[in-house]
Length: 377
Image 1 (cartoon, rainbow, N blue to C red):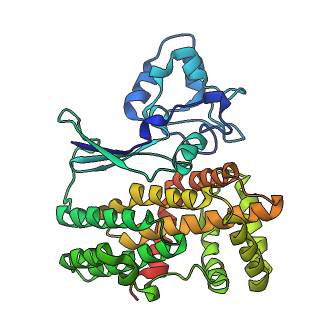
Image 2 (image 1 turned 90 degrees about the horizontal axis):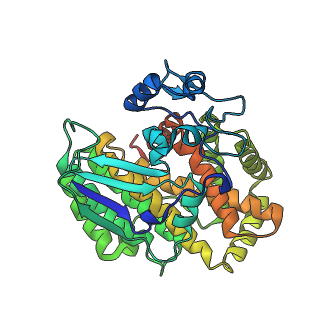
Image 3 (image 1 turned 120 degrees about the vertical axis):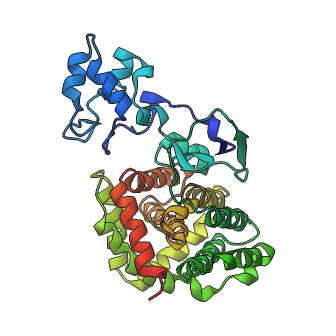
């Protein structure tokens, strides 16, 4: 079994009640079968609290009216840990914010940006992210069987992702150009899949590897630098947020801010955008933040296309997320008059929490991006 993880992976350590937020609220925490059986058989002074706090039919922890986990106390500490010990946590709680993607013979670990501490580790890292690999013959796969796993497609996806890494981390070019390029590459690769031309993928990837600034087709991408074109794109795509499940009420404020801004028209947007870009040019952390954010999405999701053939949506998920996270940060800037790394990380982890902590949201967003934007007519 190959195990891969980013170089900063082991830097994470939970800060518990000192965290500016809590991962134990806003999303339903599902319990694995092994832990559920252990909780059902538990005998001790905390057994009554377990019985009241767990939905044994649904296999999850109950929530209060504020969507806080039944085990979370007012000090944002876990009563289960306090009374039973950390070793009694279910797999979800033990792992988070560590995230794993499983492929045949390969396990890829990452830190989820939905955690404030993990978001800071990932997004503030000035050194370009490196991926470390280990081999452990004793590891058992998380998935017992990989029926019809397409090794040929997966190999092509891994090669393509390596090139995407190089593009995203090419700090000699503007971030917007890098985003446009990987969108174009994703579209070209998707066409190969749609037309059953997997063998052509390597030729396309090789061209981007040799000189990506010349290889990509601007017509197969989004125009992200021109304020008018960017405004039209935002207008077209913002409606997808209305289709997503709302996990936290305070997220409405972020969405309403963007909705109000777009309602004021293209000229108003262009002025705000110019002011914002001018301000970001004075912030050394800004291009690093954007690069790390995009790298996180590419690493986590791109090779998952081996399971659904949606290469385009995997690329667009990262670009779309970065696009709107940047917009939400711009709105915060025009409210406060300043841009701080802390504010950027705050918006980022709140966005990712709304998307990643709901399978319905993640699937709906990918379906939208795949079906509406790049799929052949």
